[in-house]
Structure formats: C-alpha cells, structure tokens
Amino acid sequence: MPTFVYIDVVLLSAELGTMSTQNQSLLELFPWVLKELSPTVDESLQLMSAGILMTFRQIYFLPVVRDARVVGRFDGEHVVQVLEKVRDGGPWRLVAYHVGDVYEKTVSQLSAKNSLSSLIRSMGELRFGHGCIVEDGKLIATISLRDLALYFSSIGVSTGVRVGEIAQPIISLPAESTTFELIGTLLSKHIRRVVVDGMKKRLLADDRLVVQNSFSNEGLVAIKYTTKVFFERHLSQLELIEPGNISGDQDLAEGWKKIYANPAHCLLVDDDKILTPWDAFVTPYVQGRLTSIAKEAPVRVDQNLKDIRTASTP
Image (cartoon, rainbow, N blue to C red; front, side, top):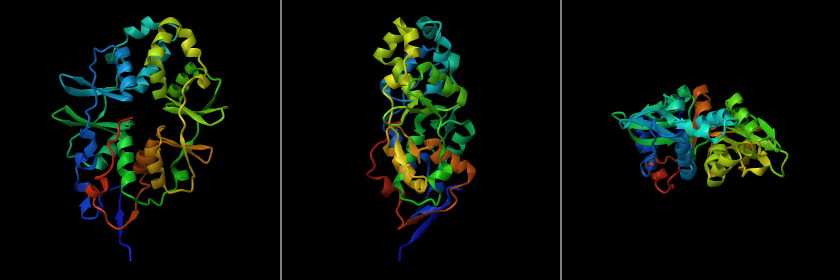
C-alpha cells in the first residue's frame, strides 16, 4: 500500500520523508542559487548601462547596493516607466536617467536561515517575485519565482487545486498595436505581459521583451537615430514569445512543471485565461488555497534535488 505524505503549504510545516521544509533554510532548499551570484548596480549607474546589463545577461532584476549593502531593486518595470517618459524627448533624455532616479527602495531581504514560508510571504507583501538572501546586509544570493518553480516541480506532489481556479483572465492587444501602446498597457494595467492576437499563434509580449528590444545593439541604434520609429513598431515585428498551454482541469502541480519548462514562464489556459508564476506560487499561498498536498512514497528533499540542473534567474 502506498504511503502518503501530506504537506501543509500554508504553514509549510509537513515533512517530506524525514525532513521538513519548516526546518530547512532557504539555501538548503535552493542550493543552486549559490552557483552564480547576481550582478548588482549602484544608484549612480546610468539607466542605459543597467538596461544593457539586463539585456546581455538575460535577467529581469538587479539588486541595488550602496557600500556593499542591498538598498533596493531595479527591474524591467523601471525601464518601461522611463521609456514611456522619453518617447518624445529623444535618446538624450534616456541617457540622463540613472538607476537612483527610478529604483524601488523596498526588496525582500531574508537571512539564509529563513524559511520558504517567509520568502513567499515577503514576496506577497512587496508584490515582487524576487528576493535577496543577505548576511549583515550584504548579498549572498537572489531567489526568483523560477527557483520556486524548479523546487515545487521537483517534489512530485498533487495539490487538489485546479489550474482554472487560479488562472487569471487574459489581457490582450492586437498584433498591429505599437510598442508604445504595449508600454502604456503594461503600466496602466500593472501587468508584466499581454497576449498578442491576430497572428497564426497566440504569442506573448512582456516587459522583458521591451527591455531586450530597447537595449540590444539594434534597439540602441533605433532609439538613437529613429526614436519615433522605434516606438511605433508593430508588435508583429517583434520577436514575440510563445507560451505553453494547459487545461484548466489539470492539477496546479502540473502547471508548476510546465511553467518551469516553458521559456515564456507562463501558460495559456483554455484560450481565455493565463497562468503566470505569480498566480501559480504566490497567490495560492496568500489565499490559503494549498492546504493539503498528497504525495506517494516519501522522498527526502536533498535526494529529490540531487540531479536537477541549475536554474537561471529570469
């Protein structure tokens, strides 16, 4: 007869085999985050330089440091905010901005000894899906929702929660919409991505795409010499991202696996909803939706993660 281990994700206190997530530190649960330390920026760095760093490292979030201590965060949303402001001012207005002009002065800062529960709760309170592990204020590692996806998809559980119960309605734009209309929609709706309709496939445009298109070699040339044309490019002209797909009837745990495996980090659900990493991990935790998760055959966490490849921060 199979043995079931029940995990209370709201309290994050049930045991996986002989180990408990409540008693494990963040670095024990996410050992791969130490493999490569995230680059950091300071307040004096030009925003354009920070955008170029994000583009060529293919990352979304940069911790802001002062005297080696974490003081805030700089991310794709800040780039999108500035791009909206400089549309009619030309490239020189963009050059005038520095990280210190726009960065957010709150970011999750946790000790390596903090629990998984503390991490998710902190993300929910600050409405941001990244956190910093610090020691005496100095950065040790960063953790993202993609790291949560790697961890949760590795433990082989069943949640009893259906994807359709968690997924959110799609917000879309037609393919002939401009880059500037995309920027305006992301900011006004307080979202990170939209579905682009009117093409052979339903694709995604998000703030990562905006950053990469702005600070790639081609993007920098376009902004410098043809600023107006840059902002008036249609979404159909951009390298859009293809999301995964999942049925709303499937268990949320299946969504965790597919989110981790998909380059867009999100899934279309039954043609009218979307499942993002935030929806999949933070929202259910905050709402108390994941109260009893069952798993056949106890497996120790350290054994379960042993052969999983290193995750990169989105």
